[in-house]
Image 1 (tube, rainbow, N blue to C red):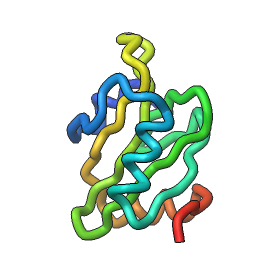
Image 2 (tube, rainbow, N blue to C red; image 1 turned 90 degrees about the horizontal axis):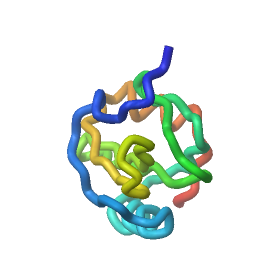
Image 3 (cartoon, one colour; image 1 turned 180 degrees about the vertical axis):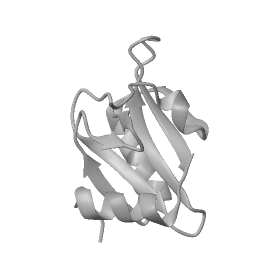
Length: 102
């Protein structure tokens, strides 16, 4: 069963208390490859808590995924995380989400 706590993924916070637009803009600026992630999407057994579809970014060379999330427990708005990613994680995103970037 999927957890709703992004803390289980490790990584670091890039943006805290951002708007969805600010988080999407950050992903566009810092990733050559990004995908639309719908609310409720499950990545690494964690359900993405989002109010609307947002962007998840892939940084292939750094082996990182930029992942938006809303923490119900804090009320801080949108948080953008940088999560360490294995090749299988990147492949999972590529196969299951719609690519936005070119």
